[in-house]
Image (cartoon, rainbow, N blue to C red; front, side, top):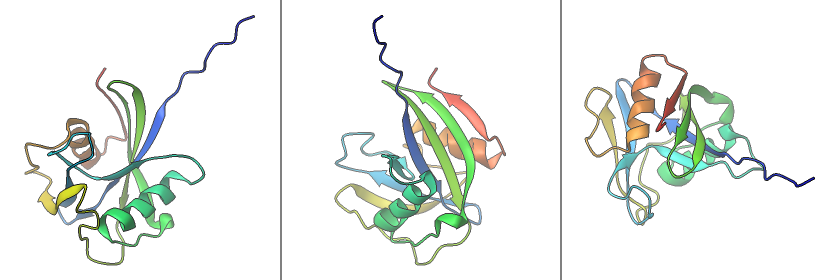
Length: 145
């Protein structure tokens, strides 16, 4: 019997940090992926930590805000397809310490609040979809199929 390689899925954790009707976005630079476009605080989940812990750590590393993982709530899950398949977990948080600031200027050229009804045109398409869907209470979607 021949062994079959198991299908692999890449998990990601994203933070939709809202303040009133605004969402915190960062413009990617020098990363090799979607440079020049806006996204949210995010990372691949590498293992050895929970998705909530991963997104809390990235919030501190990318935006200088301290978030207790217990204050992070899942708001949307997206199964998406590009060159590979991924599952993106989108979280929100209504309590954090510190004022967001650009902690990684070598990979982020802007960190700003945008009104949810006026997102920039140069936003990563699946991130735009997740923001819009989560604002409307949709908890699961598929993108890129």
